[in-house]
Length: 73
Image 1: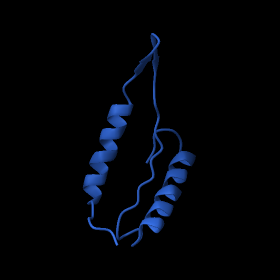
Image 2: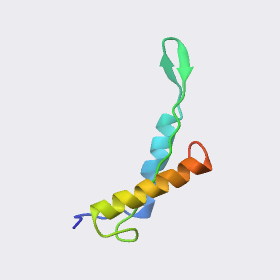
Image 3: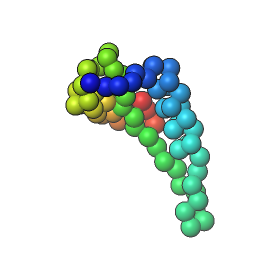
Image 4: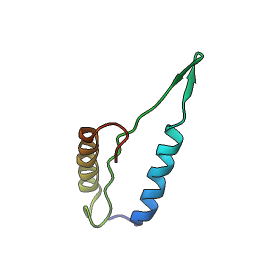
């Protein structure tokens, strides 16, 4: 069983921070490059009670985000 539970608000803050950091251009050899993200998240216990189930649901969510376009959660 999992030891701790992250609130939906905490997960949202982490995801926003990831998008913020990754939204900045990276200098690669004098050329600006950008990173896009497709993130899938799952929450205990809403989306599952064990790690394999939570990972499966997060993976499913990520593929839904990818289908919706770039830079999605």
